[in-house]
Every structure is written in C-alpha cells, then in structure tokens.
Length: 77
Image 1: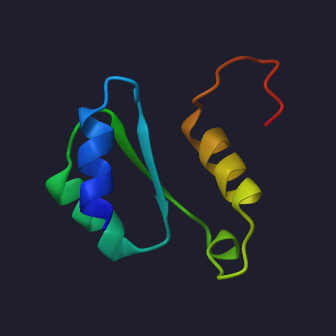
Image 2 (image 1 turned 90 degrees about the vertical axis):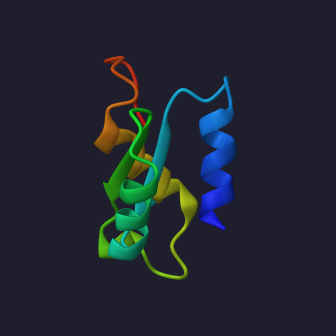
C-alpha cells in the first residue's frame, strides 16, 4: 500500500518533500531501498508516538520539528 502512495507523491509536481514518519525498521528499510530519492526523508518516530491510540497532531508536530521544514523563527508548531 505504501508503494502506490509514494509513487504518486513522487510523480506529483505539487509535492516538494515526502516525509515518512515510522517506528518500523521494515518500512524505513523498504522506503530507503526502493525510493532513494532526494525529496523523500524518513524520520524515526519515538515509541510514545507510535501507539494505536496516538493522536495525529503530536506525530505531525514531531515530524515538522525534526525535519526543520519551517525555518521561520516565528513558527510555533
């Protein structure tokens, strides 16, 4: 399932960066092996953000802060 999502994201002219946030070594290795392109970044998600009941907001906030997508000093994330 991740394959087709990444293929379409890579082909899109509107997507400049693709971020994979995962705690799975299997997913991270798969993405690195088959999609080693410059606009794809993988970020290791901590265990406390990898539970079944984890809300998306903290996960997204972690990913944004970890990748420095926003270099604006006023970004409060």
